[in-house]
Image (cartoon, rainbow, N blue to C red):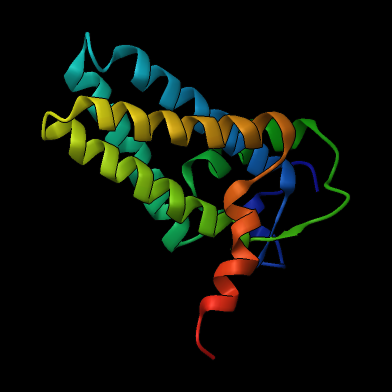
Length: 154
């Protein structure tokens, strides 16, 4: 599979768990930069946060395989490593992306409204969750998936 695009995966509902950690690490990096610069270079910080909001929205609504981080992973990392030994269901991480979207979209709105303390808090919460996933493989949004499924009617 090295050299093969992730988007060509025959199991579209499946995802390489290494991609998930790569994506979480990249996201954590973006959010850390936002927290560092939003006070001194507000337009750049808010633009960066808005771009991450868009990445979260796209990944939650469309697909992990077509996300920005998956495309970078497919072109830079994937060709240099062995094929995954297992794949995971993509639905729990997509729910985690939805949680990330909600947190960062609210943070962006709060920053834009001048409620910086709450904006910092929500961005820091999203950063903590993504850094935890990147460093340990523990995805809190994924852990919530079975609970959310039980709440859905039908």
